[in-house]
Amino acid sequence: MNANPVQKNSKRLTGKDLINVGIYSAIYFVLIMALAMLGYIPVMMPLLCVIGPIIGGIPFMLFLTKAKKFGMILIMSIIMGIMMALTGMGLYALPVAVLSALLAELVWKRAEYSKAGGSILACGFFNIWMWGNFIPLFTNPEGYFSTRTEFGANYEAALTALLPAWMCPVLLVCCFVCGLIGGLIGRALLKKHFAKAGIA
Image 1 (cartoon, rainbow, N blue to C red):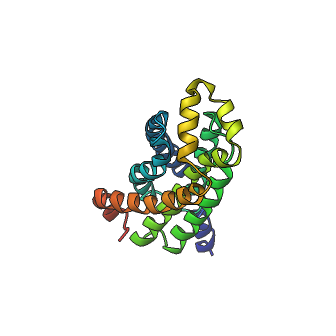
Image 2: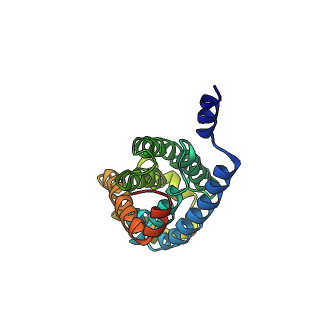
Image 3: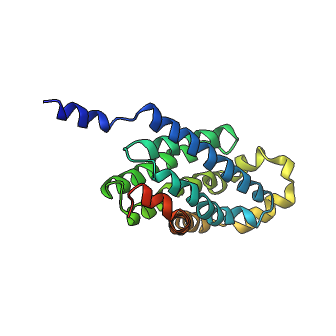
C-alpha cells in the first residue's frame, strides 16, 4: 500500500534537486556570459553559436548526472532565458529556452536518465536556447542596435553584413549540432562522473 506514494514522491523535485539546478545554472551562466564578451568583436558574434554550445556542453553534461527528474532541465533553461532578458538580450531567448528544454526533457526521460546517447541528444536540444538571443538581429535589427549605440556605426555595419537573413536557420542548426559536440566532449571529460551516476 505504501509503495505507490513513495514512488510518486520520488518523481517530485526536492530541495536538493533545486539546489543542484541553482548551482549548475550559475556555473553555466557565468561561463556563457564570459564567452559572450567575445561578441564585442563582430566576427565572433555568430561564432558564439559554435563556441557557446561546445564549451557550455561540459557543465551541462555534468548537470545531467544530477538531473534524474523531469523539470530540472526546464527550470535551468528558464533561468537562462530570464537572465538573458535581465542582461539586455531581449525576451526571445525565454520562449525558445522553454521549447528547447521541453525537447531535451522528453529525450532525457525517454533515455530513462541513464543512456549516454540520450544525454548527448538532450545537450544538443538544450543549447538551442542560445539561438533566441539572435532573433532580434533578424526580425528587428533597428530596435536591437538602438539599444547598443555605444558600439558604433562600424560595428553595426559589420555585424549586419555578417548576418543576412539566411543565417538565421544556420545559427539554429549550429546551436544544435555544436551542442551535440559539446555533449560528446563533456561526456569524454566527465567519464568518471557518468560512471558514478550510472549513465552508460
